[in-house]
Structure formats: C-alpha cells, structure tokens
Image (cartoon, helix red, strand yellow):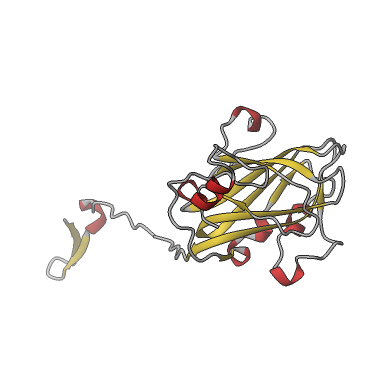
Length: 219
C-alpha cells in the first residue's frame, strides 16, 4: 500500500503509526532491500549494560537462524541497553526488525544514531537521534520499522538505544535484523615515504693519492 493510499484509508489525517510508520512522504522509492547481516562487523559489536559480556553479538544472525530462542541479549542493572553496530561496508539501512522477549521485557522504544563511535550512557540522553520508534510486542520478528532512507545512507556504524520496556525491569532481545543496500569498501593502506634532503657530508668520497701514498676526502 502506498503512503497516499494509506493516508486516504486513515481518513486523510496526519499519522505516525505505532507500528513504525515514521517516514517522510517525500522519501525516495524504497526499492529492493536485502539482509545486511553479512556487512556487520560482528566481532566488534558492543553492548552497554548487557548482563553477559559479548551477548549483544548473539542477536545478529542470518535469516534462517532468526527464530532461535537460546540466543539473546538481556540488560543488566535496569531496562536500558545500548548496542553499537559497526559495518564492514558502506550501508543504506531501509528497515529494522526487533524481536524481543514476549511480555513485559520486550523493548518498547528505540532511538537510532549513525556514524558515531563515542555513544555511551554518559551522553546518549543528551544527543539528538536520527530517528526513533515506539515499538510493538513482536515475539516472532514480523514487524519491520521503516527508516528515513535519506538519513541512513553511507553508514559505517549504527547505535541503538533501548530506553524502556512494556513494564519489565530488564530488556531482553532475541534478534535484530537490518535490511537495505550495501556498497563494498576497498580499504587500502597507503604508505608515505618521506624523502630527506641529502646532506653534503652524507656523500663524502675517499680518494687515494697513489703518488703521494696518502688519501684525502673530497665533497
């Protein structure tokens, strides 16, 4: 259904649906999108306030492993959780899927920040997110939240801040799926060789004077 058709179906009023309908009507066509799992630098995914260190990496999996329930990340001290996701390619994110624990521990709100490697609990609430969504309980990962595509292009990292739940003391997430497009980045190491100006004393030549049986140094 197009935005125009949806607008007419809702009686022509302004809407930002609870189901993630949070995009601008002047957005470009969304086009083809595929899983960005292979573009995630998985070993460098970092979670803040995770109960088990490194468990944030568990929620990023190929689609055929999406429904695995034994892999998850859960927050520790309270319901707030930050997950930093670096990419190996330049990516354009078009939609996000968040599959949480059924019930009160499912996250109810998420804010997204792009291309920042310095976000933690000291500054996350002071920063302006690129986009945020009110989430629905989605234990099967059927809901996809559309991004404002023009804001999510040329990404080398994405940071997600889960600030609240549906009443639970902790947040528990089983799967996060990112869809969009990727552009391979060929990173090359450039070695710069500095040429040092030759000094005359570095080029002294010793010539032996056979007639006088002596030697002298010339420059």
